[in-house]
Length: 281
Image (cartoon, rainbow, N blue to C red; front, side):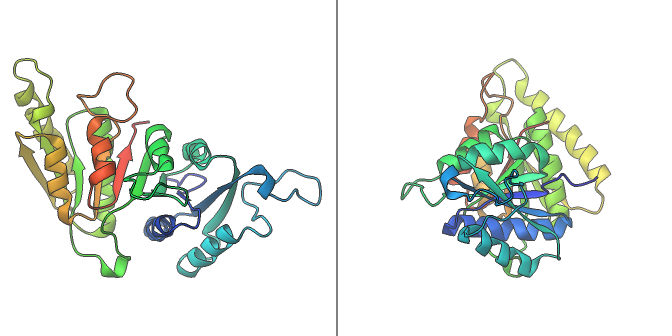
């Protein structure tokens, strides 16, 4: 499948967490053989008007923007020539990342940005991007090390039979294949609808989905975990040694109209590893 215009789109503001997100995104883009687009948002007054009087291009590096220049220098050291692109955005970072997510394979952000409150579990940009961006978003948090130092932990995904969780499993299958590690799919039955037989129907649907995914990906080790407990507890326990945890934006039990369900919110605030959130497109 052809990559989107922006490939892997990462938000960068010079903060330590955005530097970690940049490293994660650069590795991801290299593994996927796609472009890495580094997005830096700033106020309108911080951008010099083009000397020619023309309109600034998305891919034009602004003069004097040290944060973006440093990010590009780092990324170009580990990427192929021509695979790193700058994207200068005017206005709030979350708005820019959400707007450009429609043309990206995924959006990557750090846990907190430069202006994040000390001690906050997730910054406002990460929260807004996870809720409003299209497709796939990864928040780089928790125990993450450069690729050469990875432990062979699994990719973990939550599954509840919803469209969002199926999209999360598809993403998790790709990530497990890129890393050559097992995929662990976790199905917690405590969040099933209260109708009679809801748990058994969810388990049956989960078993059918898993059988289909295993048949379609014989090269992968696909593990399954069914628990009668709460999905928040089950997923956090499963993610203890994981490289990546992936969930749907809103699962089967979420209220209509919610952009992020309680489970995805809990993972974004408490997971011990990077978290992927997927909105089905």
